[in-house]
Length: 514
Image (cartoon, rainbow, N blue to C red; front, top):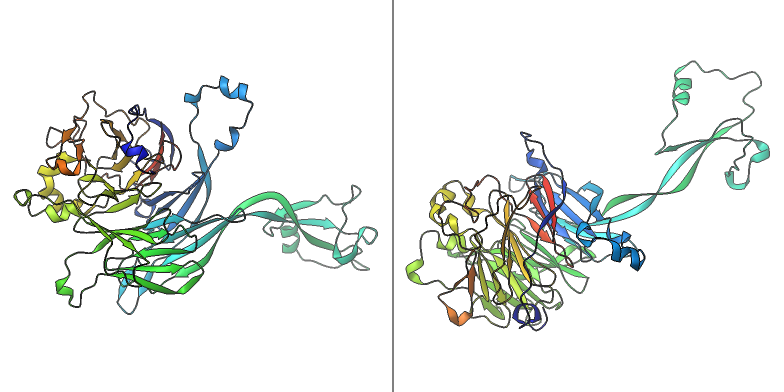
């Protein structure tokens, strides 16, 4: 968003998107029990959109790669004759690796679970993929590269066909057929001969059989851990974010934000510290942190009080003071016991060009203009129908669920998850009434109703805030369906250049396109 062209432009309103099911990975059958370790806990597209990474509670990272983008280079006449509506993004499984293992902190008598909290892609180099993954305490830097597969060929050597340096020239007159084995395997006939009593023939063995390793044209992705960044956080890590300079990244826990160099794993710099001298004076904690997408000196972090602070690393080494503060003040009459709990920001994202920040608290999505700190530009009600049920949600701890948010690459739409495996997409252009509710299933529109949500003006017109998506009937969701707090859609990601969304429902990865 450069100069507010996407959000503040005066052009025609974009048409509402028609969302369709694309793919599902890890779909479970009816009645199948989901294993705790298989539940997806992180999703992230890379900058090109050609790769997608997911992390789960078992500490594994699974990579997917796009297959359809490479096939769109046909003749213009063929492309024009193709029904574009039939084409959709297609991904395939690439590889997976165990990123984190369960650990035990003996000094604090604390178990550290292997669950992947965040995944962030780094810049690619020499055809290799790089990414950061973190659990509660340890960050790891991974390199994934396609390696050529080496095979062992059992060749019957002969003095007349022996070359220098132990190389062997193959011949069609060889008495024994060459057998190529991967990873040092042995043919059955060799295993059988080794199990029998072996005796040398009279005169010895005339020919010596030597294994030869050859490199094939086949490749296989191999993941290797390049760096491990540890012992820098006393509290659970909730965020990591790569800097636009390609050299540094930040990691944030409840009270501190540290700055790292990708090449140095044994040293970090503390740039934000909100820990009071007396812990009894603690009033808020850090919930999320994100680098500006283009300005390497700027980052934002959110707090449990619902505020977002923008800081400039050029001001001082320890950024105790913020350059800008964004918060949405509520009238005292509307405050309740749950006000501060539901105001806690669970996730923030910069728009593509860094002009806007999207934040998600328990009930709403809010879009902020970094040039206007008087209040949010727009407010979108994700599940307002839950407000009468906050007491029940507090009792079962659902009120502390941390939903993520995402923006489209063009900045025209935002999305976030809800309960009953639903997620909502909102148009952010001025005057737009686009509000779509989708279900993470093969039929995402099956729970739709024809009555659209009506936009209503905010009481605070000075901030130009627009509130949209509120349901009129309490106890049901935006489509007049009862909600299930046990099935929640916490994690989702928007493709950086196309209208394609990947979201996680328990252990299943669903993908949709428009």
